[in-house]
Length: 71
Image 1: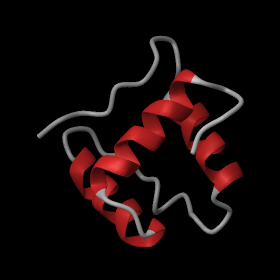
Image 2 (image 1 turned 180 degrees about the vertical axis):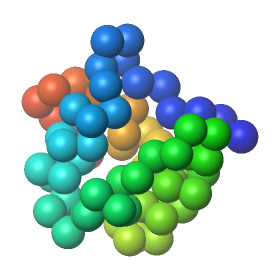
Image 3 (image 1 turned 90 degrees about the vertical axis):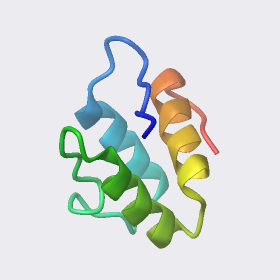
Image 4 (image 1 turned 120 degrees about the horizontal axis):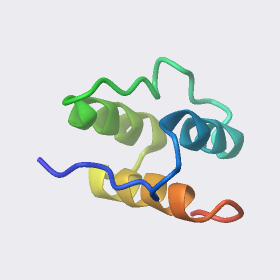
């Protein structure tokens, strides 16, 4: 199981808010991250966003590394 790699110094709360700005249909429950259970959250997001787990992981990492743009 691979983990999500956030930019050092970037909190999950900050990343979560950026994700919600770009995907207004996602809820706090969708973005609930439990330590050691990242895959469950990634699968929830993949299902809801219509993307693969790897695409969601890359999207989250992109948001954490770049304040202004992510795809």
